Amino acid sequence: MSPEQPRTTLTARAVVFDMDGTLVDSTALVERIWTEWCGPLGLHPGEVLAFAHGRQTADTVRRFLPELDEEAVLRHVDALLSVEGEAPDGVVEIPGAAAFVAALPVQLVALVTSAPGNIARSRTAVAGVGLPAVVLASEDVPVGKPAPDGYLRAAELLGVEPGDVVVFEDAEAGLQAARASGAQVVVVGDHDGPASEGLTRVADYRGAAVELGDDGLLTITL
Image 1 (cartoon, one colour):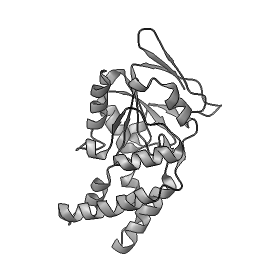
Image 2 (cartoon, helix red, strand yellow; image 1 turned 45 degrees about the horizontal axis):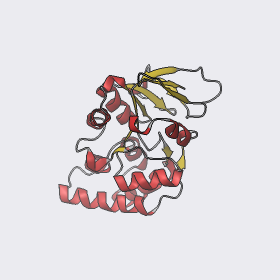
Image 3 (cartoon, one colour; image 1 turned 135 degrees about the vertical axis):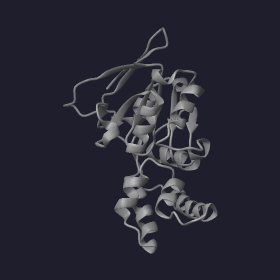
């Protein structure tokens, strides 16, 4: 968080993070990959990127190439993910993310990402952010964000009710998913879409702190 922001205290029994834009900043890499994909297809990169952020790759391909059958969609997805997996350069930690994740009890933390598991492992490793034991990647969640399925499944695996979870998210689709799950939601960054209205917001995790009470309740100060 930035020094000028007022301190906010939340209580929860578990914490769930999105990845891109929430724990790691992969903006430069993602923009390059989607822009290169758009070129030969005559698509507008700005429109594609505005939709793609926070969503599974296949959902974006289907949205902008609706004429494709599923086999063709998957060929595009495989090509895009191959480039992403081979080029982790430019991925950096959201300030304070590594220390904040490390301060949380590992058994009370999950990651829900629209990226495949291999890319989640690669990007967090490059950024120096530790992965929790519970990781739900795109292949683990058939219906991706903005549906709440991933966040509901994370709460189930952590053994808590969705309302006892704090979710950190940065994109419209992810914020919609988190809110629909019934979790408490914190916006990371400057996204100002409809789903961010009225939510707690942080620029990053600098200064964030957590305490675990004897009753298993987490007190998170942002």
